[in-house]
Length: 351
Image 1 (spheres, rainbow, N blue to C red):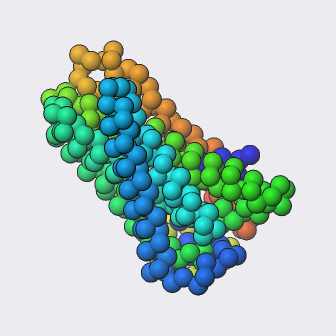
Image 2: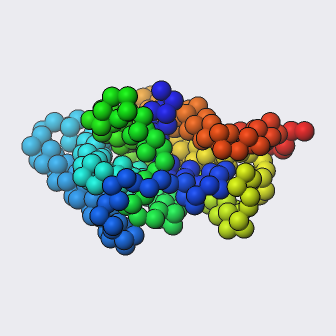
Image 3: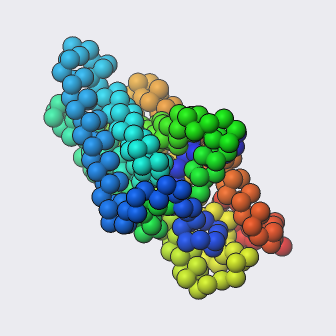
């Protein structure tokens, strides 16, 4: 279903959308999680990520030792893939233990930074002649993106007694139609945790190319354009979220929607920024092995394209429709915004 697809892409910045209903648009968790304070909730989420990364690192090291003669298995790309999967499982176990799938919310804005650093360090340890300038640019823009997105989650997160309204809806629907086991296995684990990890990992393929295999000793136009596009995407998200928070703080009428700043040019400027961030990374990885290695690079570039493409498709055809359906159910006047304002690509208003 469309709602299941929505859970395949969790975007912390999209908790702040064209909505002024209840702060960060979250719903009370029925379990209340023992009355944990926000500080204790942060500590538990941080603990889950530390444990997840530690388990991932231990398994990655073990695989590199046990299969030392297998070049494919010990390749940092495949080790990173396994590590990402194991870390996701650990975070899910915390989600299940505390009956709150929002443990995962900040994970996928954190782990790409971990992957990029791991791939860069692995290249250096193996004495691969990675071009540090390109790698530095990719690491820098990824850190800016990840820190901003994680900070955005932290500002709006109120603690473990709250859970994203989409998860609550999915839990209610699947539990009522089937049972809670179906929700936790197919809803929470596969849709909310695992599938977003897969898509984001594919989106990170350019980071592997740039930070581990990128031996082209020069900057190409695609690198410059890619960095600029990714940074513009981050700025779009930052400005759009700031404008939304300022607008909400003005206590607008319940049935109102924001139509100022970036929001007057498209209905979802934060989604637009997220999409172009990944396309910027794709451009950076496209020639990172050098023009003479285009044939060997083609397969990796294809996977880079798949990652950015899947993220864009899910935002455009799953995330946005679900958000707008909810908007229309609460404020029919939003039809005017849909009629006059571009959906995701910024443009001038229609009359």
